[in-house]
Length: 143
Image (cartoon, rainbow, N blue to C red; front, side, top):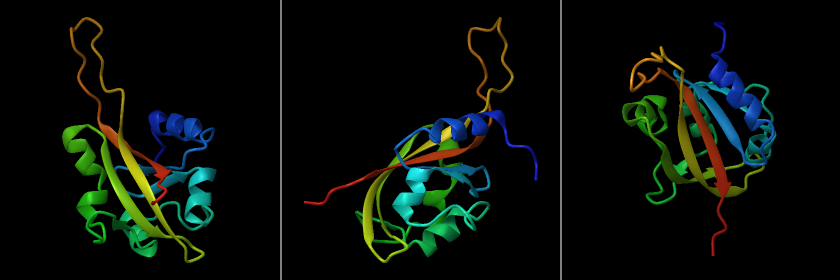
């Protein structure tokens, strides 16, 4: 397995200290980390999840777009979608917990960008490559 880029390592370290559920995926859309809060939200530990494709996990967890009640497709989950506009993506989801309960969450996906080659003498620096994404979740209380 190739070494993990420093930006993903730093994101992992930062998310360890958050009460907010965070998943980190690589450019191949494979899960590389989930913090304790994410494990509690999903209802399962990290064992057996790391390295698996996000699309496979979304099917296993019964993830649906809350607005349309349709399952998320691969394009909606892909890091490449974030890379195309280099901006965040926000969506409300419904999923099945391990204990059978349903949860509704807001998810914000943030692209994780590498440093790239920086020219300290240029007015602007080129953007680095997209290395993956951080997926942050907030539980929604339905009224």
